[in-house]
Picture (tube, one colour):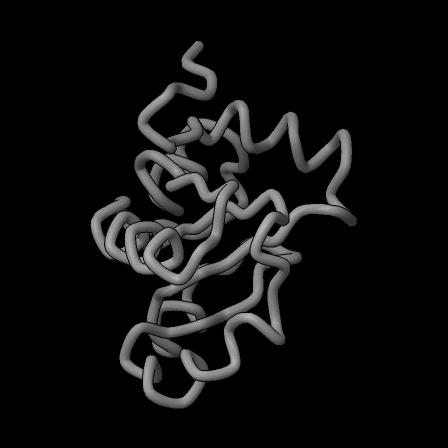
Length: 116
């Protein structure tokens, strides 16, 4: 089982463990689009769709703590990697990309999450 690594990533298994330990302190972000969210969604994630970047980006530091433990998810991990990079450029210090995205989460953690 993979855990955190220095590249700013977290496996879905390690994420699941973190969510069990201290879900209320985590900042969980899902950057997928509304039609994707309608298919599959993990409880507790705040949806910040990349297509709506202009709407939410100016408020990001009011919505999230820059030093908060932040995990970002998309379908497979590419869009969330871009989001992590952007958050770091905004001064966020504790940001991790969820490796494999919701697809890996559905396969390895919660088979009740639909795959698409």
